[in-house]
Length: 249
Image (tube, rainbow, N blue to C red; front, side):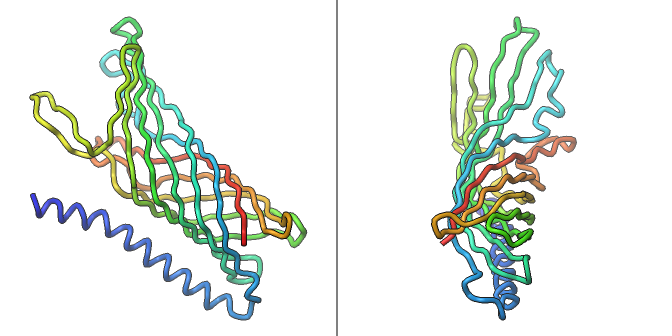
């Protein structure tokens, strides 16, 4: 049991350590590339926003089974972050960020064998996420468009599963365990502790009251499955859109 826990800990830490090393390397390389640019071109700030997210492929093997109809639905979340904008060359810069972000999704389940009885299964995931983005500013006007793209690395900090029907509403933490069919306790966590994805977005940046500000729409797509144990034909992944506002110092 101790060996299993040790292996699980190493599996969780390894992707996060890799992300930290990549972030450190990119920041060091950007610092070297930024030599010759005025120091004032480096920016630091905060951002916040709202997101609409879902989990893909959860209904892939389930629709139609046991007389049920299953449809995937999105859910609303929030995010907040610190960011740094480090010049690379010309209009190109590096923008590493440190987020807390909410993700997840919902499944609406309707049983045609039970008189169209319906229920909703909800998953809410919280992550500390590190996007490492390349940013390209277009033009040099007061307000100018820009593009970002890059990988994201995340460590799950919280996870809740909820089930709502016409008779009851139940909510539990993913790793709190439940009662199995034989009356025993099961503590298996169905969701991965880490996530790797990609982010791409477009926005508008400028100056307001002497501060640099920007507004941006991003699309985020998970590249690894969020499920610990799923059928081989199912690869559920995080995905969603974010609308964010940033303020530089």
